[in-house]
Amino acid sequence: DSGVTQTPKHLITATGQRVTLRCSPRSGDLSVYWYQQSLDQGLQFLIQYYNGEERAKGNILERFSAQQFPDLHSELNLSSLELGDSALYFCASTRGGDRINYGYTFGSGTRLTVV
Amino acid sequence: EDKVVQSPLSLVVHEGDTVTLNCSYEVTNFRSLLWYKQEKKAPTFLFMLTSSGIEKKSGRLSSILDKKELFSILNITATQTGDSAVYLCAVERTGNQFYFGTGTSLTVIP
Image 1 (cartoon, rainbow over the protein chains, first blue to last red):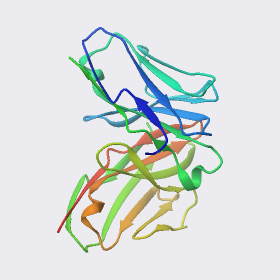
Image 2: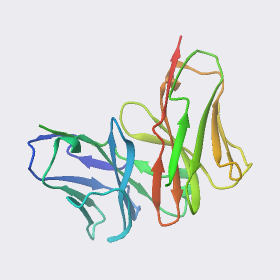
Image 3: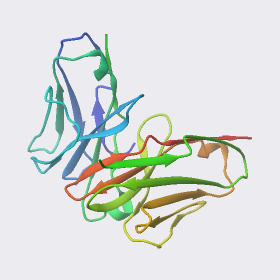
Image 4: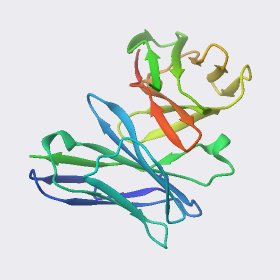
């Protein structure tokens, strides 16, 4: 157990629907990063939050949004889902100062299947 | 365009062999390079490199970064079947943006 918790583990939903993925970072970590891993595109950085504020944006579609709450858990909202959104969505957290030794800790991911 | 390229894409070796995985990058405002091992699910952190020429070592794994030539290598000596995984290289640029390579799939056969 890495200490980063993601729920749900698997999600199957129909096109056009909206889903919410949840991530609880490791205790003490203020930063949360979201990644999408699909077979054809590898691991793609989506967005980062630090202590409740958006810090960086990667290849995140406008149909996707995220937020980080005061208790530091984060949610990734995916709307108007398309077949191509099927992927493994990872959350990672870091405690900042000791990144060089511990890097970014990943959760076990949420497998989203859009049918 | 920022990019990270890993080679080879796939590698099959026998137990005991030594392997070298390559990661080259073209990323502006480089901050760090990270190596991860991904088995079934979540990538697990191996190394973070920020300075050229300083080898990082953990057991049979070692890695080094060359910021002039824009590449890094990950060495695994005396490979074991448990080393079978996809090895991911990621480059972080300032602004906390990350670019991942597509990974090198390593299979170690007994």
